[in-house]
Image 1 (cartoon, rainbow, N blue to C red):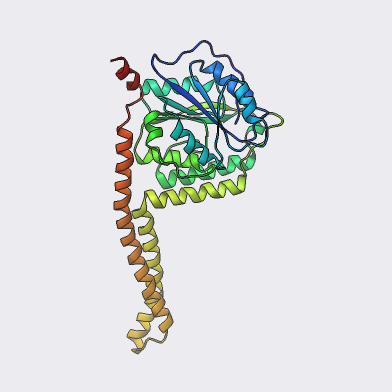
Image 2: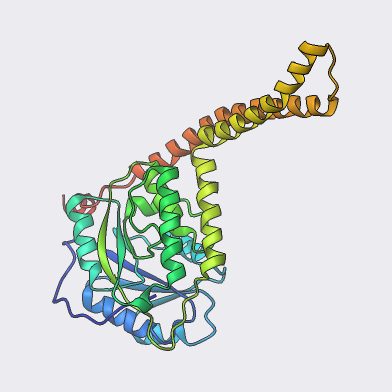
Length: 324
């Protein structure tokens, strides 16, 4: 979580528009007061919620003293906090606001003017300490793998700074428990083909006394496995067909020498290899059939999410309907 103090003027949300700034935090006593103050200055008409995820310091007290509404989520993990936030908040716009507060105004304006469902704050490092080398390298690798798997064009899939429409939030089933949540948010937008955009936002190094909770290797591996798992669940036909084809190729490779020997000598000397080849071909067939069945299930699940999405008004229409 990081923010800077920048005065952006007396901006008020669109008439009738309710904006909720959601700040998940864990042991952020050193920075949470400034974060709340920064967003109060940038978005004076917004309600600021701080979700304390079992902090061992005075994070909740400091946030409350700064004027935020503090709530506590006892299940550890960023994904668990986001699940609770999305279930609790009933505003027109929600911001998972963890970085530069001054950028929130531009992000909300982009979302409302273009009637988008998600705007991602694409991080632009302002100094070397903002991004550790391992984080930069891991982010590029994960971004490339994500683009290959989902044909996506996000430049920063791991950014935790996002603005959502209400219909995005209320149609999003949060399944992740930790830092994999950002990847899941991107996949949800891609699967429903929702209108999204990115806005460059400054990203600064943490101040002294504030420590990042992200582990480069542990969380990087978890995010990678999350991408693979999401690809399996959202693209089952492609995933299981590729697995089936790979098994079939191995099976044929093992079977060819056996057939050659049989036609030349009239015997099958390698019975275990023949059994293995047959088993692999059966598994290949079952994998492709499983892909076909799960693809039908996935389509039904996607339709259910789309129905939940369409039940909510588009950004900009909430206040129009109230005033009409």
